[in-house]
Image 1 (cartoon, rainbow, N blue to C red):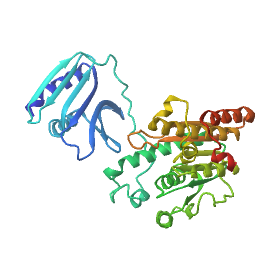
Image 2: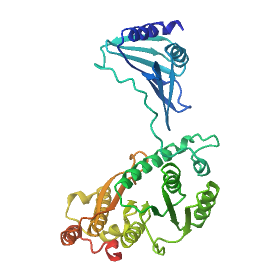
Image 3: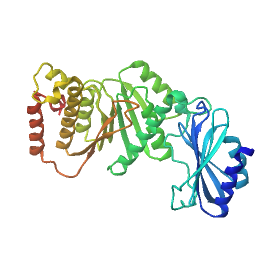
Image 4: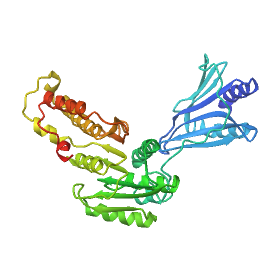
Length: 383
């Protein structure tokens, strides 16, 4: 293509002068295929220098490697047809080629963005912890070809982030050879299935997972799906969290358990001496109902939206303190971005060998309750 001649000329110069840094292709002509952009760099593979293309899709990255001559053919297919902007970064200059909607080409040269070249080692694509297996198709996350359904892309990202978090937590936990996990309020089981598959099939750990769920149709669906997948150590029971009496819990999970169910789950974890407690607290009704109509001195609590957030923080802080009182180290952090869900806070408890100063912690809880006029926290009564 004649309009690409200046781009190829600059590319050849950068290779000859050994000052090539990278190429980015951006501003996709259409977004239906989910391909956002492409980054290109030099990689030495089996002793041969090649151009490595990283295709950034909505749900994953794909890497393809081409010889310099092959890469020119690929650029001819991509520029203007799929991407309207290409930028060649070198140590001498940045060269941009841009196409208008009508295909009119323009170029410009600017000062270099980089002073150093990146290494030419061959990187593997970013690890996906949730392999595109049968369970993802049965749960409606992928199609029959194993491709993530666009509307489920956020759920797929959430699953991978969840597995990443649990993997990190398990490294420091004192777990038995056969790990007993209970997921309280397992719902449709997206995260439950992903965790079982990841631990058993990818990490080769001995695991049993029990999903506790009140909705009979979901329990039946999940048990049927687990059987179809051959997940022998994964099962679901129809029970309330209060009714469930575990013999052993190494890891307790409760994500978005409604009303005071988060507290019921925390109480089960404490009584079972679970090594890891992983919760995403939900529905902070108990404290809100206590404080309804009570005059609050803080001007922040004059406004409804601030009052809501403040009571959520107070509820979860007391939960964390109660865990600490029972010899757990705790942390609170964002699970995923706010753009996906506002219920994105995770409260983690990990069993500690360090003895807790229960008197100091009790005073902290008492002070918080006094400050906000709280008579009782539901979890206190359970433990």
